[in-house]
Image (cartoon, rainbow, N blue to C red; front, side, top):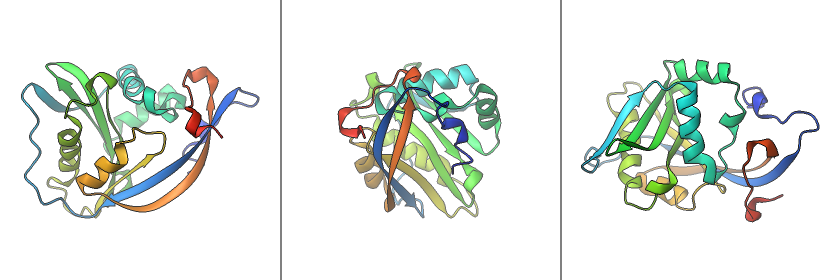
Length: 198
């Protein structure tokens, strides 16, 4: 993991804020027994190949309140390669044509598929979209995936407080927790909440 995330290390002597978080790892080993997710009228979900600029804008809007910082540190060329990978899928949620959120899956862990990121823009949180959106993310992985062993995701104490309950309600089960310390560069403009400061 250190090699994979070497880009996320601050520069020597760089000003940082430390966040101490609990990361919860979850998995789902079989498709949930429910009808396929149906999104409300006016809501669409499409798989898209986003440019680096489009991805960064969406990632920053969705993740800003929840301390999503690692992709902000990823160099453009590395992010472009990641987004172009056939193993990575990005789905954009729109409400009446307006971007409302996104999720990203990664089959590079096959026979598991990881839900790398999932979230709504702040203005769309709390309007009843989250559950169907998450169900649609799960459906996108399990639908017709021969040889799939399961789906994984992690969340942490920096995320929305309803994130973990939502994953559990969707059918994921927790299998591990770890404590992590993040040194987040001040230049990113993110504010570490008081309850996470180390």
